[in-house]
Length: 395
Image (cartoon, rainbow, N blue to C red):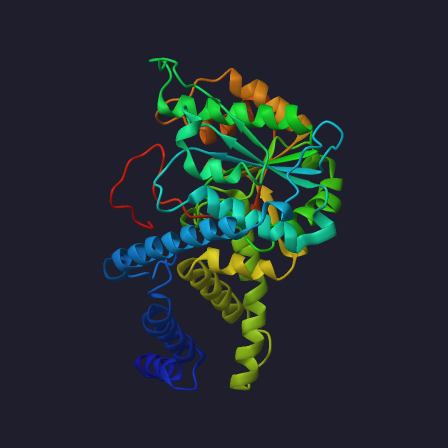
């Protein structure tokens, strides 16, 4: 018996043993290579927060400040004659109206100018495919004249303002309720001014990605032909990267994670079998590589896998929505009217902001909503209009 045990131990511990191969691969991958490669990846479990968070946050703020100055110069140099400021709202119905909601924030970052300049540039780049798109700036600063960046934008884009100048603040309206009321105002004004087929409501710190219009075009022409998507209450175009991991309560992500393991398990088994000169199909090894690839993808970060979908609009994912957050929300005209009716009947407060309010409506009203992955905007506003923070961090 002892002799058999030593034989078994020797067979497992030989260098040619699959057990030693896979154990070595696991130790080298998770103990050496992944920590070395991923220690600066912000949304990875291997991220060394203590080393990198403060300098990366400061560098992000510095770079974002430069981007704000670049956006300011963009509009200063732009000749008004080169802009077709829309004056045809009564006769022309846009396919898509991009409504930028803005409030006065720190002057040195020029958040709304970053967003507006990016949309303007992408629309110019898009050309004839985006001729049926328009941009509207919605100024919800209580005293609209205080918002200096909007004064500059008024020469280039149509504008609506929620003027509360001279009115005494209603003590019953907290910051979260005001934010919801501002949102309702801007969505309502978008429908009244243009009656578009779709409204994309963008907050003033959500800078669009390069591929936003090709992806939206694909959604309009292909994906929205499906009834269940066409009838959705809204589509989120942004979800915080730190909340995009596989390990979460969302069943669709768990299924995606299992699917990744089921696909990569046999593929990596074939690669290993070819390299080691072994039989091509071995179920224990397939299961090992399935678990290995699932663990690696979660620890490195699902966010970075999602970035591969940017290769083509058809690769973008449309999955059931989660409750946070609202930097960029797409509504069809009928769904926008339903959302307005619902939101007007809700009172927002601490712990029940407009994103949670919208999400709560799905079950209460029997509605559906979806999120597009990867994100189609970048959230650059580290200085919030709701939560004051003199030393913001990326996480």
